[in-house]
View 1: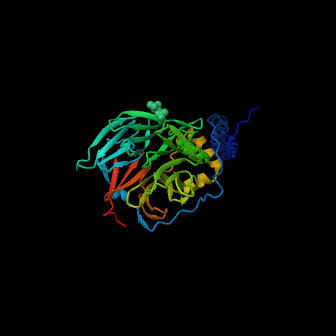
View 2 (view 1 turned 90 degrees about the horizontal axis):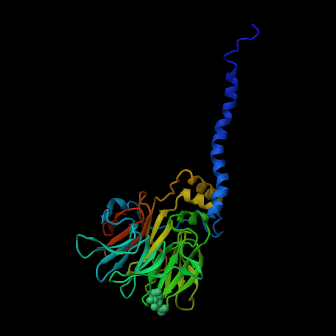
View 3 (view 1 turned 120 degrees about the horizontal axis):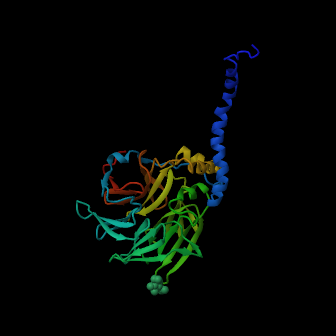
Amino acid sequence: MAVPNPSPAAPAPNRTRRRPSWPIIGPLLLILVPIVISVVVNDLNGFDPVPLPADYSFSASLAVAERHDRILASSKRVGDGRLPGPEDLAYDKARGFLYTGCGDGWIRRVSLMDEKMEVEDWAYVGGRPLGVALGPGGDLVVAESNNGLMTVKPDQTVAMLTDEADGLRFRLTDGVDVASDGLIYFTDASYKFNLDTHILDILEGRPHGRLMSFDSSTNQTSVLVRDLYFANGVSLSPDQRSLIFCETTLRRCRRYHIQGEKRGTVDEFIQNLPGFPDNIRYDGEGHYWIALAAGKTPEWDVLLKYPFLRKLMVTIDKFVKIPYSQRDSGILKVDLDGQPLALFSDPGLTLATSGLKIGKHLWYGSLVKDYLSRIDLTQADQ
Ligand SMILES: *[C@@H]1O[C@H](CO)[C@@H](O)[C@H](O)[C@H]1NC(C)=O
């Protein structure tokens, strides 16, 4: 009788009193533990995000009068299954070949001369070729992301051109174009992060990119512009007096003057793009085509605005893969003065990395598809 029967109801209030704290502490630990770990892990990677430049506008997005918002419905696939990740496009008009660099290290070409549009394994360069451009002598210059700048002769022999400048090795050779005098202009998106970790370069918000030239007659690599925010596509102007280069992170493309009074200087071309620019291509008819790999979305705006959020994202990403927004990709047509003329996009379009008008078609490639796409511009709905 000394031991009283414990009331079965007694422990219950204790349990219910403790319980409310867990819904807070649980998620809090889930966030805090990775952060603490990340301080160690991220510092090993050297990932240290900073605010973007003060003049960058997170909200501004330029207006485009002509919009085609559903291009997937009217797109035709070419080379389906034969072209893994066709990133950039180079067109040999005289012979009717469209060249593209694929994710398996092959440069492939599509014959546009015959209706079947057959795909040919043309030259193996290895690694992950990105930018491709034809030189005046018929060589195809390749920005191979892992190893550097390469060239493929018409007989398919491959040669390395350059992989460093000013003592700094390239990590992500990305965009390329060749002037009519044979001088090669190209970018290294980052000397810090490679293609696999390129998202970290964008999220870090620091300028690791460079615009350079390579002179085949002297083997000289020259740095033209440094401190670029993910230096990407390059296109010579039709008069060869300047070139346009894109900076993905800052949603802009700028002009570098090759000749004239402004020689060696940079000025604005187009900014506040409605997405993150990748390759830029000139169509020979007065227009540049800028591929927007991903659209400007509210998620990206917030991420880019707050460095601590970027750090948090990268930290969580080590434990749970976070899909970064790649939707609302598109291709923007602009004139020679950088005025936007028309936007071809689709909510479901992801990582369109190049666009080029050939005849009545707009061709576009993507890092994540295994075909090229084209739309008939004469049929494109408004
Ligand atoms: C440039 O480099 C290539 C390959 O290394 C070499 O064959 C060629 O002689 C070099 N040209 C000059 C001008 O140094």
